[in-house]
Image (tube, rainbow, N blue to C red; front, side, top):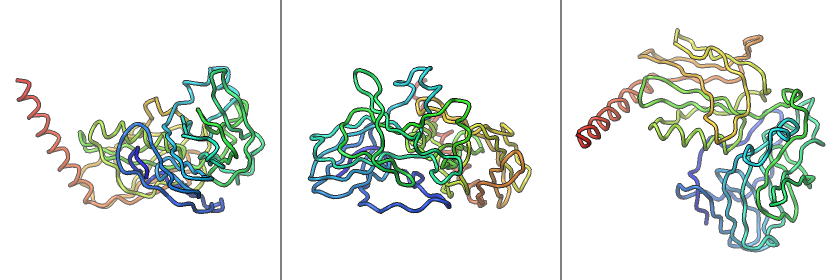
Length: 311
């Protein structure tokens, strides 16, 4: 049984140049709250459907975990030498000895020509500060640690700040339709479940809805690279270009706003600024505009009701 954050279908990991991972029993989440509580009934392999954390259990036990933010634990000097390579988790177990291995999510593409996997480490934050542990092994989307002890755990990559742009990053596009205006918000982020959750939480504050489209980019992206959004019709797009970067989940994530009217079927694509090669594309059907009108009307009616109550 698992209770915790709401499952998000766009947290899946895939890459055209990476091999697939061994499948584990996926435990689905049942409710929305700040932390997750997984009750593993027996020995075996288990995967969280939202966070993509994986556990190999020697026996049944209970695990509690939640997202944290790297900038709360790494100082400015450390952030010049270390790059976040996955979410940071605060993990607790009723008995650490019951957990044989933990698989921590990783968004660096290990198949990249310039990826130096020897620089990928596991950060463990204790009262005395950060300790760095060597991974037991790696898979395309996870870093594995045997016989873990729990507190704050996550994957970092050792590198000088000016070299971060050499690492290929498994990336996703998140597309939300606003309930306040006839517009779309397009996010381009590393495939990091904590960032996906942060965007979801922020957009839902404003009653925006996720547009169900393929999230994964066609190839890994690079920090510091610039991309532009193009459409098959003349739409207002702001800003005209974006720089791919990592922003902590506690920060507001940058997005591109796309103003849509009552056009017919349109195509959106994310392209490299340097050569306009597409790295992601999606078709939007006319039905999305009627959905926007419906939610705009419903939101306006709700605001009117609230104003009347306050009056």
